[in-house]
Image (cartoon, rainbow, N blue to C red; front, side, top):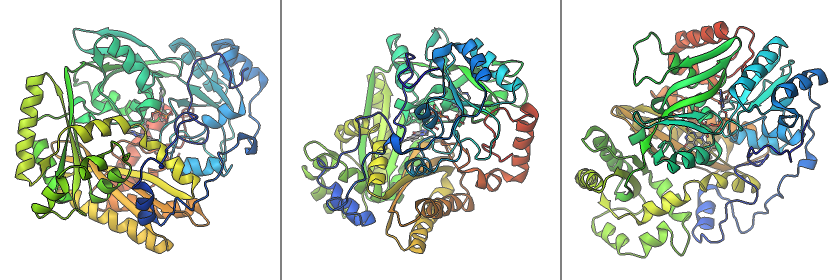
Length: 562
Ligand SMILES: Cc1cc2nc3c(=O)[nH]c(=O)nc-3n(C[C@H](O)[C@H](O)[C@H](O)COP(=O)(O)OP(=O)(O)OC[C@H]3O[C@@H](n4cnc5c(N)ncnc54)[C@H](O)[C@@H]3O)c2cc1C
């Protein structure tokens, strides 16, 4: 049995926050950031005293349940060095990276840890571990990158059985590329950068780039129905994942990679979003694409949010097929400008040019302008034609193109922004997100209702709060709205967070939105599931889990409470 320095090469994030040790968010090189934060949530960064980095010495981790004989049997399957009861590794495997997770970890308020972490090195080992766990009455929680923010990994507080965290991290290879079909067999534990590098080396890309790309796995993407920022071209993971292998007690569920199939209710769709409840995904056959010759992200400004959203709807319904369509509301546009570096940021781009003058001449109110990014990929002629189509639509809606400069910067810093949440937590402030999808006709009502609901929640707490939004992931009939909210905590961070988060989620379902477009359900969004898919829908799901996993071996209490 090993400690954190084990020889196995599985990368983990910090036990207390996002990303890897030594990397964090810095504001000193972003002159507009401190005034922005002061105005948004009343936090004075110059005066704030950040708390020290959490020390693992201060954590009290309950002793693991389970017998030495059970652990010995596990070691007999995967090897001694791939079974661990190390406290830090158990903590890392307890939660994802939601606000609630991070607050509880920092407060040493963890109700239940997995008892043992196992790193299988093959599908056969996964099978043997699952058989052993099922036979011994243990619980199995599959673990990918641990990046979920819906409480999808959290062991039930009252779970009395032994809990095995099954970390797929050693299964990280692209096994094969069917070049004729554009299909790649990929092991489920491959992290985004690892699988993309293996595909790129052969001239292919998966085209799936969630903001959590660096620390999430393809198995996790499938299990949470993830969506990446280039979904407009490549599709969501639900489109990309064509074939699956899923280990369950008694056998392996095998779904061959058909482009489409009429073979009854889709078992593939049942596995998608199942959050570990239906078994362990060991392999995904994914659609892959030739690396594009050209990739461009064009920036546009619109005078108002309403103009920009109308333009994006028209783009979605037109002959144009961009890879990214995204527009920030005025508040998020302000945030983007404030997080730019002085020397070469978006702010510099905007203020260092004649843009504000041009905008004012057009009669625009600079407080209401909205920044949009539209991505194009393919051969040069295709990219040029797409851009021409989009430019015309943007113009019809009063927008203006400002070139590719801001798009390059956006592309470079997109994986850095997640570090901001730990920065805020260090200074006593919350920063979190909620997102949903809805038909185009519902988007503006949902937008307004959500902003109003968050502001009412802040008022009820007597605090100054912030909420901003962007639209991304456009479809023919609708799109995803992604809200980011922040406020300074009072005495009870979790209760205050709940007040705001609940208000936002309720505004979604009350106004015709789903509970989530791509973060999943877990325990975080489960309370609103019946309002989203109807009580009958929940009954179908409950029946599925009960029939397929009657003993509740796999990740109990997620999506629906057992
Ligand atoms: C800063 C940040 C940005 C994010 N951005 C995005 C985004 O842009 N798009 C997006 O879709 N999501 C995003 N997320 C959410 C998260 O990254 C996704 O939910 C991701 O798909 C989780 O993958 P993972 O490998 O980390 O899974 P984990 O967090 O390890 O697990 C998530 C769930 O999947 C199950 N699971 C994992 N692997 C398997 C497997 N092999 N077999 C069966 N079940 C399994 C687990 O049991 C758990 O229920 C973001 C999260 C953060 C913190």
